[in-house]
Length: 120
Image (cartoon, rainbow, N blue to C red):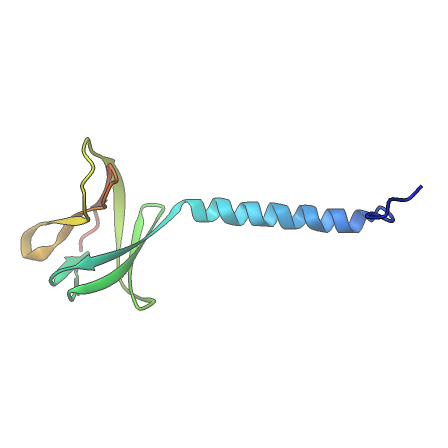
């Protein structure tokens, strides 16, 4: 007796659904390692030798690499690493070195601090 909802078993359909499920899970796993943040610099800063004007930027952090974007255009790149801290800041902040060189980026309510390690 055939079911009203599944009149016949179609192995191709189930194989296609399985492939789609695997593809979606791989895409989700790949994007899990990427962090994307919107960040505002209050004044001119330097990231890995590149001067950036004050403004709103998108920071894409993936596999120890920082990409800074302005309106979907890449404006700076640097090597980075995450470092754990004991406290969680209430707001985003930046630790600067000489000549406004960005050394650390701290994100609101997160214990991990992004350390910018690459400078030319």
